Image (cartoon, rainbow, N blue to C red; front, side, top):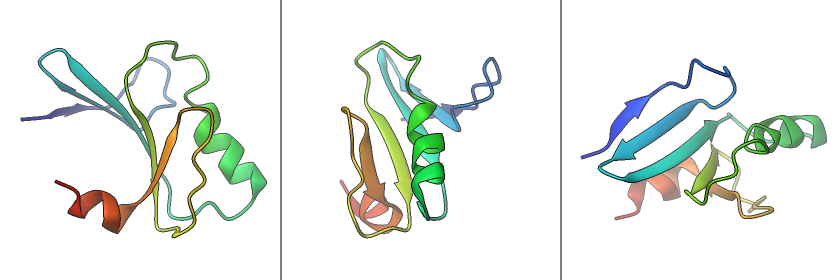
Length: 81
């Protein structure tokens, strides 16, 4: 079971999910419409220096993954097992 919490400390990461000693970070946006939106969503992870998975979830079909940060289409992400 995953427990979701909003990171209020820095106000930048939309969700942090923890399960036992596992953790994932999630940013959510409707679409990555232009370079400024892409930079904003991916920049939120720049100050996190651990090795837990970091995701940007959007409606986009194109994969914008970069620098170890995983971009996923929301439908594909929800249907994963």
